[in-house]
Image (cartoon, rainbow over all chains, first blue to last red):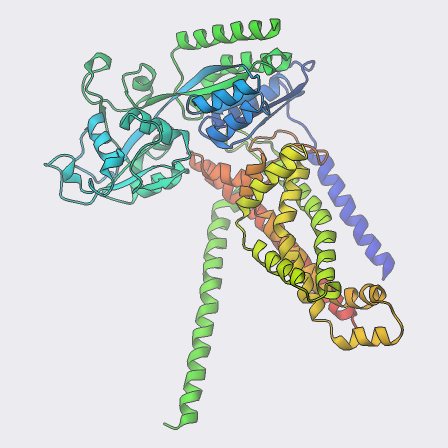
Length: 328
Length: 285
């Protein structure tokens, strides 16, 4: 009995070791790969910005194979909490840092830099069978979403009398997300303030599912989720009633978000950089690589790149910050 | 209709109802499994198991995730197994029926019902910050150990309770001390049940994402952890991340990763069944 069991153990150990060895085969490197850079970079924060930073980190693997980059997804708020304690080098954020978070960072002696990396166009959508909504104004959206609307604005004809006397079903981002903060800021006028009686989810795919199966639905979420589900949704052109940045109602497209005419629901996405990290050579190299690559990579993962002059501006800010951090 | 006829009818009716109830559970499970297999089975190949995370769904793999999951499983077992079993033995064999023991018992039973995210918050404060372990494998395993400890303790107690009194009395009658009785009689006799409980608890731990996200487990880790102090990701986090992506191809990846996770769970449960069988055969009173 004993030797038989021993053989089993050996077989198991052999399989395990060979699996581990075989799986250790590394990736290929690019020709200009820089093996001299070493160190680790820890990044955390918004799940909206995550795909962009992940794409950059993935490419960076081929560029500097010995730098260990890791990215978490604790949300913009969670990321800032760690950032202001100095626990991470870079924070992904889908909103600007809040006063309280900035104070925490200051209290811990952390100086930082905010850089925009790409745009997202929050897209307002209805069911594809909805034939009455041709456009909406920002003021109408405010009327629907402001806290006072709770329990009162419940039918389509309350928004425009010519629209049908049917129930209005609302779908939107969950209150913990940066998307919610941005939408309420842009539409209601006050961040983190809206009605509560709507279907909320942090997972935009749930919202897509909801709106695409509910003929009386109105919802909003990130542009990438609309792009991937175009056939199941109908986007609503938004009129901000300010003709200086594009007249009339405007649909979110790559062009209208990029040139700023899709207002007020185009939002910038950010990364925040800790000045202590900006003194390290591998972090500096990663950040320079980031801004070389992000115009292409952000579009590849479903976001909208900024105009080239904006990227130049961000690169100049970065260079100045790195120089300032180094001399401190 | 006589009274006994009526009772027989009731009996029959309940039997039908019971079969119906059983099949609801099975049908749901079958639909889920078939759906997942259709979606994900075609995606599983050597590259998928062996690739690092990627923005391109067809190149993305679960290498670091499954290694992380195995690490977490191993560490959690090493931590929770001795702690839980010792606590179970103490409560069942040694603890006097005092007020203190009752309070302990109630609290352990309550702990089993605490939502897992609360354990994550606890782990974040104690292991990640206070003990300065950071978002490491060790911090994750300690957190999950807390999560499954109540289950391990309760199943250990149940297994020990099932050992007949006569065995203990026989042992005492032959002059064995309490510890000798526990070590040589009670533990071997109940070990099958204890192991089953431990492994079922592990199956629960292997599916947890929320507490690990809270303590700082990551989504993108392009290197396999090499020590308990390394950063990590696990399969449930990878699945959660993929399923919330806009591109449909990532949903296929998630389905494939779910199959791998299910496979790990099934293997664990299989081991549980095998061990229970083996230990039960060995016991001859």
